[in-house]
Image (cartoon, rainbow over all chains, first blue to last red; front, side, top):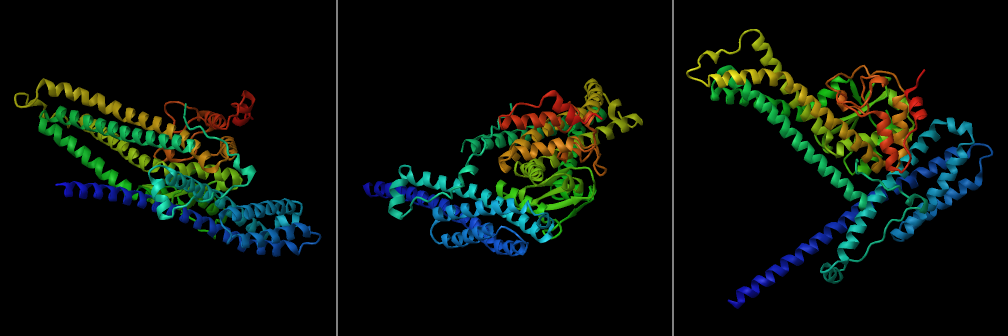
Length: 187
Length: 327
């Protein structure tokens, strides 16, 4: 009799542990998937930038400094890709900033603004940037959910045991963080 | 996370209302079928027979529209599918909004019409289509286009597209049944069983016959009013969700202002498809008011609700006049 009770108790505990473990795995995979989505778009951005630089550098008198800034920022963003999410986010934000100043300069050159190739590259970079920011929201939401899940009791006991560690957020640039709060109560 | 909660609460309320509405319209259809059946045959069997036929027809139509309704609507509007090559910016904006809404990329169509408008259709986010007029593409800038696409993607994510297909069919079936009955009665074919009073319900049949006529006259009207009320509520919700997706209330607000100032009437839209569009396509600005009979809320009202979301004061009288484009 005691043996049966013991078996039932062990069985229930085992089921409980399996449930928590699988839940954590699911959440962690969702983070990896969201991060992979960001990486695809970052890669696309890195590939588009040399084309843009080539397209605009032929124009006489174009500010060379802006172009070298973009090229350097791109190079450091590419290397930062291997240094973890936090470093990568910082390097990518730098790149976003230099690209923004490049487009601001392009505005001063009517020839460039009329160039079909530059226009389509600009559109591609704009959409890539927007997609990065929307993917980042999903990634950060998944990280928040996962980090909360591994810190609550009793999952925290198992998380340490099975090596579930906290993940970093993909931080947005400071100014983009001021997202307006949306009240959806349709009163 | 706070936004997320409020949003899912809104979605849940939306789903609940959808179910309630479909049940209400189905009950109305059943009641209409029952009274017509009993009123004309005088038998309970007849009553159930007509009810069953009505419900079976409605179900068949619903299944049909569930699987083919979107293709029908797109074909009726003369929409043509576009690709990444033929409309890169439009496809990019749709891709961004699909990403933000976390739904698969829908099919994208263009309607060759200079009136700026858009609609979404389909049975679920996996089988969804968005259609945009050429006028919309020409008149709006990227930010505004994103607002409109965000609005349409919200309709997809909230399952408004399936709901509007099904409700259109249910409302249509009620109209069909009522119409059929009224014509049948008018041409003297009715009350065939009314004479067999000793066998059937007798007086009750006569009473129900009157009730059936009254119901047949008012039921399509009631069904339509309910459909319109819900349609308007969904437009507000889609506007609010669009802001959540784009994180940019200004784009949608400017798009609404630009479109409301536009006086062109969309030629391919009709009474059957008008509720699908971004703004009411068949009314001119003067009559695009928020009343019981319109599919869409007043644009000034929509803009004011958007401004409320971002904590801005509502439009003042001179802005409203400027929007109306009094010329």
